[in-house]
Length: 188
Image 1 (cartoon, rainbow, N blue to C red):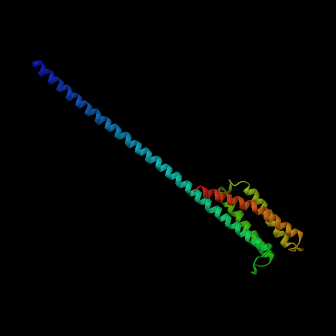
Image 2: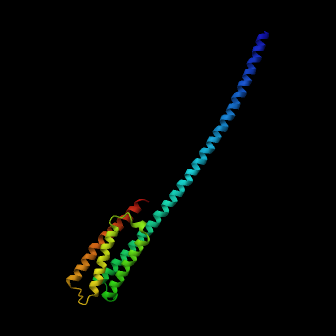
Image 3: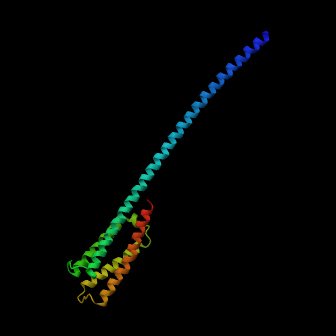
């Protein structure tokens, strides 16, 4: 019977040692798990911060591009308005002589040209934008030169040609601007 008591005592002692060892290993594992969780949370927070900064920068560039495209469209609209007034005024309002109106049209083109030079990042991905802008410049100059010629007549063939050139050169530029604005709006 003494062996049984000694066996129970030894078994109890091993049980206590095993429980202590398991508890110690559990605390160590828990400490390691807490460290891993903390590092994971810090990494996720750092990535989230980076992505937030990237999203902010992307939104900022998107907004700036949208503003500049809107401004260019406004200038093109004003250019088209003065061109229309130079060709055929639809109202009784007197906007001045054809020379004055052509000068206003030319100033609008200069504003558009300046705007595109100030913010080239907005227009660099628009296909043939600068080529179309150059063609439009030629037709604006042609209208202004025609209006300023000594033998100017609104019924002349030169005037009809100048108007036709302007319209055919304005259309691709306007269309590409509208496409870019629509594409930008689709991204939202």
